[in-house]
Length: 481
Image (cartoon, rainbow, N blue to C red; front, side, top):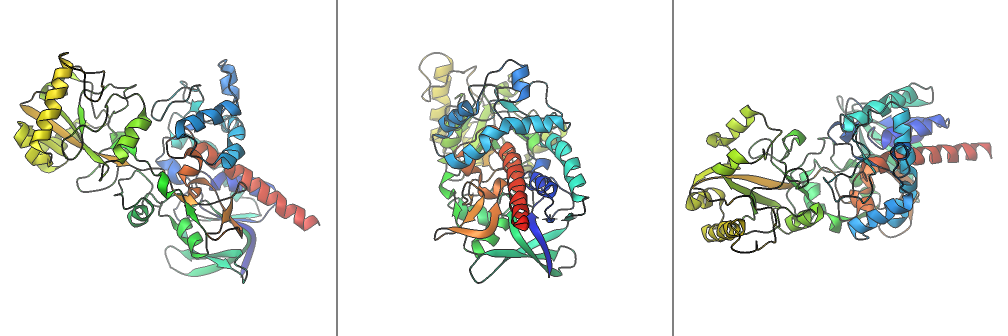
């Protein structure tokens, strides 16, 4: 049986920096990746980063600290994140930003900034690259590939992790692998196995199990199948965070009847970017949210209460002509095909009854919602949802409606870990030899029940680097004893 010091499963946001640092200590490192290239979710992520005390903040005269960052996180997620893990990563995240910059990261000139795609920080500490997640990948990939060229390192692409190996005490002692093309299996012995396998945003069955039966509409990589969670569960690991799921507000599926979201096609629903001219109506035709609420967290929690995580965005021909584009990323050809009548989620209707029949909303609820909103637009009454931006009534008779879905990129549940990234058992204690980092520990571990800007990519990079260095140094110290 082959033997190495550390096996890292996944060459994505957390796995690459983990490998870079582990190889630098001299440890024998094997990286397993089921895709044909590194990067994982960075290929589809917006790549938002956050960190206090970076050199870039100082250059802009921005005073910030890890304590202020931690306080902002606690405010945004109402204290639902893991304080011990946050204290492991947040104080080092400014250094992570500096590390990326030192390695050629193409920072957007608008950064650092206060970003409103998620609940906003009080200080400008959010960053992103000119190419989103690809900018992060372009900075980290050369370092990773240089590390993999070292004599104490190996990368195996197109290789699937099948199961964890354990000894009589339940400690993890290695990994069973399978070649994607041939299916042939190999066993690798290792002192430590690191699960940097990402989330489960492409596994509808596992997603339903870990979200109380919610339907999956996703922008995640197709390789985000939850393999690491399932392997760890099989050897006694505990999964946490099922109760902290929250949908992102909101998307339109790229193909009728499908469940995939293309980021370019995301609707413009952020009031700080584009104030709403439309109404957002529940499947029964009732208002469920203040559409111009400046708090995205409030809108996401309102959406979470809808049974299918879906709603109708309703407007009319006059608003279509007068308002800024609702779907700015769609091409004219894509919109023309969508409105051509072949997509049930793009509805053109002649009158309220026709709109109700085509969308399934109740006509009486539609009439009430449109009438109350019209009265708010003309100043006859206060909007029932306390909406402030009421530019013009939605009177028809030519109506339009687009079905929107709560979506997922980052999954909330993940493996329970201690503050050194060791995976915990369901019955208590840790599984010796098994570690997890990145989305495998669940987005809720760091963001709680909320979306906190930059608290996915940056902790994955930061904790990946820390874990790789720590495991490598620990192994080196044992060898010298």
